[in-house]
Amino acid sequence: MTMNKPLEITVQSFSYRKGYPEDSTGNGGGYVFDCRGILNPYRFGELRYLTGKDQEIKEFFQEKTVMPSFLDCIQNIISISIDNYVERNFSSLQINFGCTGGQHRSVYAAEQIAKYIKSNYPSVNVQLNHTNSENWEFIKQ
Image (cartoon, rainbow, N blue to C red; front, side):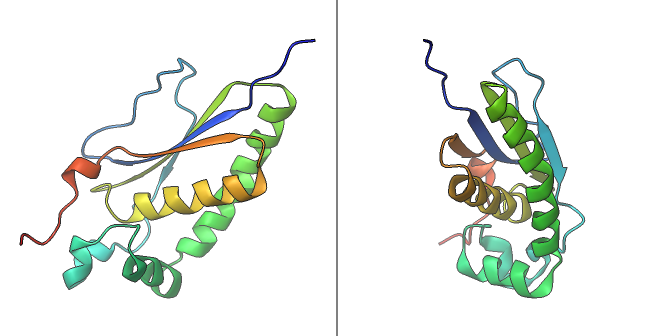
């Protein structure tokens, strides 16, 4: 009897300015979700220098944007593929989130979806990668 390897899901944030993330599996890249339709915290003073991992940004998205309903829709879409891929013993799936700078919207979305997958699909392996983190803007000390 052969042991099936768990499905490997790579969740990534990226900047459209830098281009789409590479797919090292050769499967063609999976999902790409465009977060540029969500209000950008970059335009709001000090929020510019935070990332989608910071509490102030999380609250901004929860309270001032349509991000929660955007992510609900994405959860419904990706669940179809995850269920199917697990059932068919597929090896990998990539889920990418892009925004202009790859620092706020796409980072937050990737973080939230990775958390959703981990809590709802404990049998899969999830890797989270922020491909533009070396270019994030911070307040210069």
